[in-house]
Amino acid sequence: MTMASLFRVSALSVIALCGAVALDQAAPGVLLSEAVAQDKPKKDTRETRRTPALRNKVYERLAEAQTLAEAKDYAGASAILNDMISEDGKQALNSYELANVYNLHAFLSYASEDYPQSLRYYEQVIAQPDIPLAMEINTRFTIAQLYFVQEKWQQGIDALLMWFEMNEKPNAGAYVLLAQGYYQVKRYDLALDNVETAIAMHEGEGKLPKEQWYNLARFLYFDKEDFDSALDVLNTLIIYYPKKQYWVQASHLYGEKKDEPRQLALMEAAYEQGFLDRSSELVTMAYLYLNAEAPYYAGSVIQKGFADELVEDKSKNYELAGSAWAQAREVAKSIPMMEKAAAKSEEGELYVRLGNVYLDGDQFQKSADSILKGLNKGGVKRPDQARLALGMAYFNLGDYDEARKAFRAAGKDGARRKEWQRSQEMAQQWIAYVTSEEDRQRELEKDLF
Image (cartoon, rainbow, N blue to C red; front, side, top):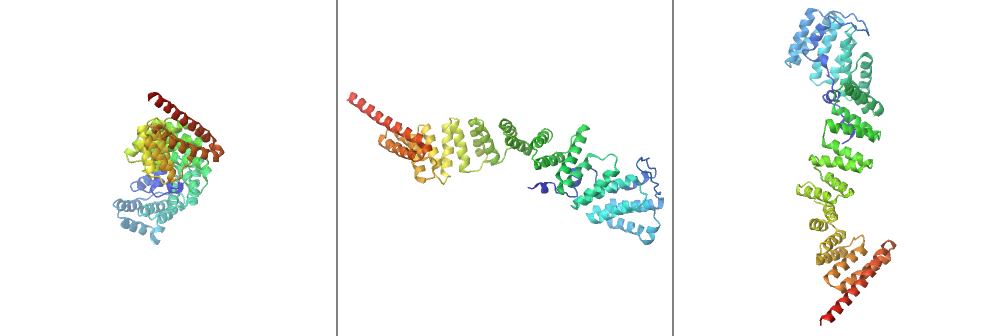
């Protein structure tokens, strides 16, 4: 999923993201109460306006239209409003009355999800002279929101910036809306500045910012590759909005910073809460335990993952489990895992590794059979070491001739490559040991007979 799709704006998500009351001045039951309140406007130091009165006969018709709107009879409400702004009716209305008619018309269009038409009506509201300043401010914010709903990002930004110029105390939600707009037009620095402002405002007032705000900041920090700041946000999300994705992502970031103890600690916390329910997550967890030299826990995680049918039925995953148990000296648990890993593999490497596990478990015939199968199948990374293990298996079976053959073959493999020279030396030592052991047994036989 792309960042753009995560923050796609819809009519509802604009409101949810910003935490602002959208279209508040247009809602039925609000429009007329505001109109009455504006008959006694509060003194505003920014601008003094002489607003015309809302006459009683106009108020009554608006109330009638609003009643129909509340009953969802939008056609009936529109008919009344259209009559009020007909050629003759329009001349009889003053600017404030016209603004209220267009305001209710805008709501009706919005309720019908005709956002372009709603926007046109709201533009008519602010086009009227001498409307109350509060009404203009509220309408301009709604206009900005409607541009965002229609994904007209730059127009929404421009409208919102004008609203900021008129508003003495912008709320945090407005800064987030502006941040969203800047994000959509790829002006990420401005987006980050505004969402940081919103978060700081809420935190400064002792309020908890919305989860979506932190997430927008987190994505923007990621874009800047400011992983320290992204981690700070993730740690905050973990505290106040604890979800699996935050634990896992924070763990990943600690891994990027090479802080493996914290990386593992966060994954452990997620695991203990039952958040890790994907094969890749459990496999990652097991590797982290192996890196921390805790193979028993690595084996336990994968083993339980198989039992819960969460870890994928793949050769590589069985190999991981088998290797973890082998490192933990849990040979009995390692063998079935390595058997499944080898059976699912197309190359002989895992049969050789299985043979080594059998060797550790004193199952010498199975060890020899498995190593031979692996060598015959091909794809063995270190045939020199495989043949050394094969020789040991035969030696423990008392088959000294086959043991010598295996050690001689290992010596030849070791002689072919410089980095395998150690195997040549070990093979020679084993051949000498096999010979001495044979001599020792002959002497014992002479003494017995």
